[in-house]
Length: 230
Image (cartoon, rainbow, N blue to C red):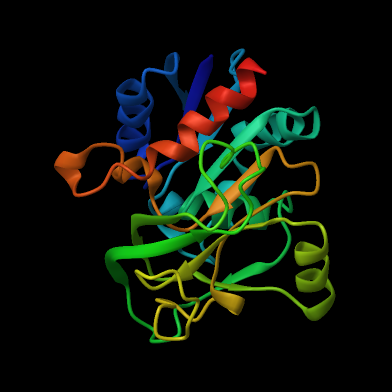
């Protein structure tokens, strides 16, 4: 497999994502510059976390118009696998590759800590390597992770099994206290209708080695490998 990590001005998780692929040993990984007009033959594209273009408007609003994003959008529409992590999730929302929007955290503060996630859908391309309802420990680091969607969109997400991760406590209970940012229904990650585009606020690339306190994030990348081999 060949992975491409997009580098935007202001990104700060591009190397983390690059290193995660190296650590999991899933294949070749390259950087894709925001000014590129091609995904350069990659099988998977990662939009990493950070503050693309300084997030001077809405988070991800400027990055959505980068030259590389036209290629990423075309790639996604043709069935290519795309992962948007944190700021990358925000960019996917701005590009309308995923439904909904991001608002500022409920407490209006930047939140950086480990959280627990429940795997709601274990049949996706990004979670097929773990059982349903598995609890993952993965860090977050964001100021605008408060996911919102209207009632019709939320209903469709559930009806089509597209809510992939929800914030929970260490016992797997989905509660208000376990919600770090006020996200609707504790939603931490969703996929598009075709199932090839994932957006998630937590950082799996920062949880690929026990040296970092958890290696639960590996399941996201390794699941892609399993699906690709199929």
